[in-house]
Length: 72
Image 1 (cartoon, rainbow, N blue to C red):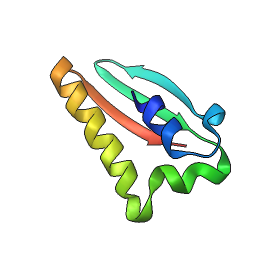
Image 2: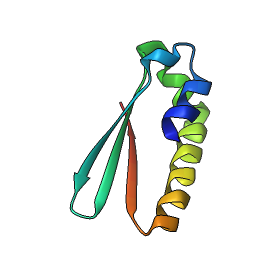
Image 3: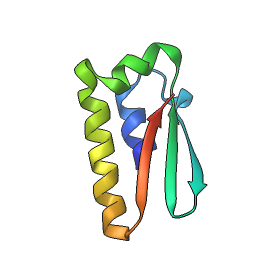
């Protein structure tokens, strides 16, 4: 879901990569985009990044898991 949303925001959708890292019951997602697209994914004042994280947390809460999103 995060990968799809990020692809819609950037100029280079092929540069979007989401990787997962598990630490016990905690899931950490790493979102990587092309260098020129980082600002588009973060947004002014971090608004888009906050919205992506909020959406992700809603989905994770529904599944009963804990998730964090890091933008690289």
